[in-house]
Image (cartoon, rainbow, N blue to C red; front, top):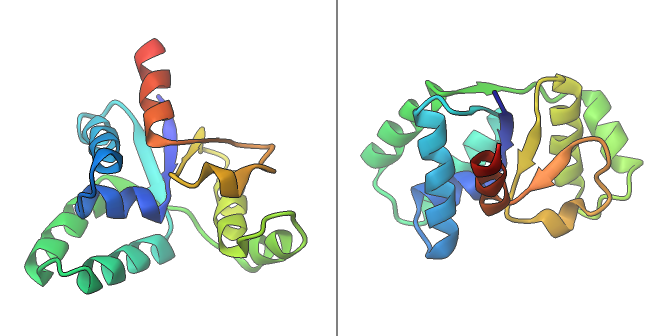
Length: 142
């Protein structure tokens, strides 16, 4: 079974619908709910998602319910000092993206890194980085 790392933008697009991006993110989340994929993320991604939902006008009760349900389906990937050091030494322009990428690699159980911002991962070589739409196509063809 495929295990994916969910980037913050995928989570926010699912919980705070914004057009076509949300449709594919919701489809990915439905695969997770159905047990067709496994997922991981970081504590910082959940915290950032919470913040963006709160400042985006989503009611606190809805945020609590949605994230509680999410937490029952995902596991956390550890972020440690080494991931920051690798990111700082890397070609990643967005160093935070680099930290998350190196954390996902170090986990050893992630098959795909799912994000809308694949351009930020153009130098990624050790773990496939895909959009939600690309992931859905891969799963359909498997």
